[in-house]
Amino acid sequence: MQELLRVEVMSYSKPGEPPRPVTFRFGAGDAQYKGRVLKVLDKKVNKWNGNVMYEYLCDCTVDDHPSKIKISYERDTMNWYLKNL
Image (cartoon, rainbow, N blue to C red; front, side, top):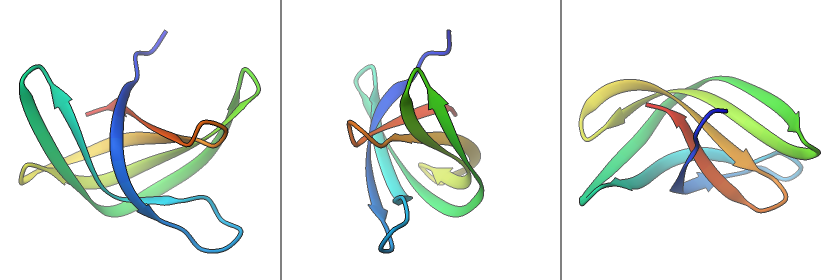
């Protein structure tokens, strides 16, 4: 099973569409990290165990280091999760 890290995300959305991530932050140990989404490369809808999750593959920067991440939004609970960094 893949482990998910819960993150705080600032997002925007258009009427009738799911939210898109803009910035995010998360903590690992005692450190806090901030990231900014530069471009959404791919968006998929995953229906896992009856929960609808929108999965985004993004080009981003995390503390000024370029990276590609997968970030997911769970529609029913309105939570954001970071899958890989």
